[in-house]
Image (cartoon, rainbow, N blue to C red; front, side, top):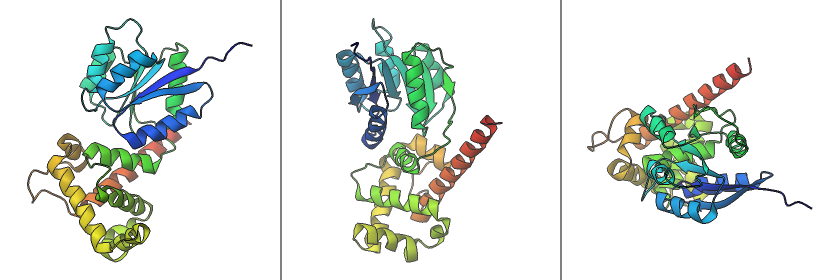
Length: 265
């Protein structure tokens, strides 16, 4: 009996939570196998040489060496895997450079995991694809969307305020009326879930935002909020920070719905 051939996939992204979600999803698909997860560019190169994946799912922004650097290294190798770039930013210069270095497909975060799996299968079967795709998510995963935004802004997952802030955004997205009642309703709900005090929730969220403003990715912050936060006067309140992200998620969800409807016409 012939052994069934599996498509070997390597994931390279420094967001560990995202990698676990994506890796678990891919491993559940028939004929696909995640052979490794790299959390920085140097690991991505080492694992590519070690495991010889058929498809490399590669983030652009990573520590040690970014996705462009990984592509530059792989460009000179004999057996280069098919490469799908995933990123939260669709800058034309990055897209162009990625394609020049041999990237086979380009997807904007957040995206539908099923769509990614389809592209992996197509590339593994040598199907020629158009290089660039805008966000085509129809079934959005709110947890992943919020995780990607907070990670991109630069709030470390080990910071206690990260979990409170993530919970606050998700709850406010599902019930926007909470944006006008952070102290009376939102903080107490989060405190109850995490068995702490509302004042500690508020303070931890404030510290997480402060950390993002001081040490986060200012390019992403400027893209989301429309300005940099170099002084204390520029830094948003908890309410402003949560509101801007919730508004962005709602707009993206509406855009995805419109795209999905137009695609079915």
